[in-house]
Length: 193
Image (cartoon, rainbow, N blue to C red; front, side, top):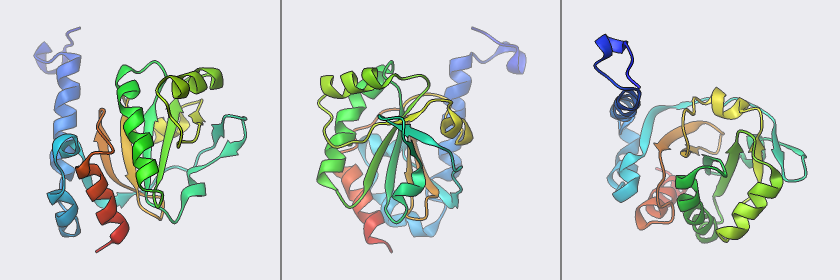
């Protein structure tokens, strides 16, 4: 689909790619405190954009598998790997097992997948069973309040939150979250400066 954006020179997909590149370029390693973490990025983790300053995260209600109200505030005090996904997302199916393995390997952090859009609990549970997810909670952002509030435009998107609940890094697209690079990054964050 061509648009009239800049005389029609860009297709929608190209504009999205350009925005991802610009977003990444503007946020990569701008804070000197990120130098160690930035040096650990390898493979898929090269896509991890580190923010110069922490970004506030909206307080919204999420629902668990029993329709009980939950929030990201439940994870304050821990480093959080917040993953936005959906059962209909093919890259999410590829990525989710690595998030589960990361949680198993690093219980000192919280890996928090949040299903966006209308994902039925039965569908999420079936998805978890099919890809052998054993260590992750079921959380849903049914009205997309959190994903919209955080500017999530596509799936998957993974955001790292500091123990104060602020966004400090973002990775757009799927990744191997249990790779040596990802584990080293999370270990460095937990350890602190």
